[in-house]
Image (cartoon, rainbow, N blue to C red):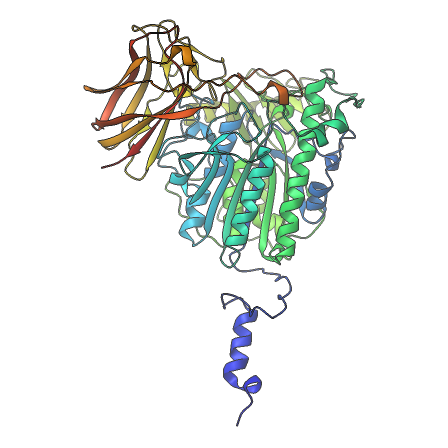
Length: 614
């Protein structure tokens, strides 16, 4: 009789287990060592920070903070010294997700629908999902709230976070989970990282793609005291070559404290991957969405967030992939957010067939040190070295090649010798000037970039058949008469001063598919003002509801601020059911108004939540 341990079947089973073909190990067996995979579909984790500058890391020369976990990530992988994103948030997110310039996709603003890229664009999440990956996104989306722009519609099967541009509170805030309103737990970056770790734990036996767009160091400048105490009274070392004096106020200190919190969360995530023996088959990417949100230490670069100079566009880019990307590399080739989609797809062996040509190029061979395969147009390496990378924001256009940066107004800077962009050298290099100005002109003619100044707000989509819930927040509404928005920053605002029967809160909507919808209103009202009757109208259909329950809540948020905010404060909102309304497909005007006002104010209104019930 053949012993089981020597039978061919048993040997085959061991081989299958070693190759990862079995779903799990026996409970009493030791875990297998980390696999060094070179040719399979690797897992992917992409971390995107918000308003963190290139120099907000100790590995990039900032003496004012310590980021040991991110520094280690770079030392164990690669970093790019000339990696560029957009001047502000939503364009960068669109370019990362699609591999195409945001100017091709209708992104021209950061709110009022201008943050949404066109619904027919293929995203990296959709491509990975089609290849069999489990996909999730946790954090700030900023590419549209309603389907078909919602993250669940763009390839992420699980989403937790907020879809707006910025949020008014980072401690246990109101968030959403796959469209449904929920309450956060603790400091938001920690909470988001917890969700990412949990998803990885749940899906470790299948390929996964986790996108973690953290919300910091974007304002409001809130951070737990354990981080703030390190910087509260710290004297910051100034950037001696920066044209703008480095801020040494609370804003800069808070931003650095937030960056150290980010570093700890990156450390927790990497520790989990290593403890789970997943690091050897996972690619981890780290970058930011624009330049720093202040004049803090930034290696003397000109500009900050919102600028199309180096300081507004240059981002850290760090990638670790054990066994695939040699450790310790520093890449000097110019690259950008548009390159991540094609590069990561190639590294993960995910085939893509985008419906529209990508602007991004693949760095897969450059990063891995593989032999470069010549293309039909010549050497693939030359296409990376000779490319011109374009940037646009709010009517300003910039072109960057391997040495120079040109601006739409004719300025030309030799970055190799003048990284601070202090000397216009257009007269010294007329041939370079002509080449880059032609690239700018061609880019404008081809993509026809829009700006918020010349485009009306887009209608908000409502009633998509794939969406159970649709939010219509105050952010996307227009008040009439005396009704006022709580802050000039629309993203996390509410409507207030609703005091009469003439004024309305109006949404310009496009109902994708009509039907019956339950509608809830998230509101606040003092006890003394309870009793108003309100009317919700969609087309010719209306429902009337009396506000019969108080929600007495006060503004809060400032007690957690480490620096004075520009965003409005927040409240604890409660839902009330307005009823069920029928809506027809097509363009619709949705409005809220009061039919009577027994007190001084009808209510404050944060959002409407529509739930399809037919």
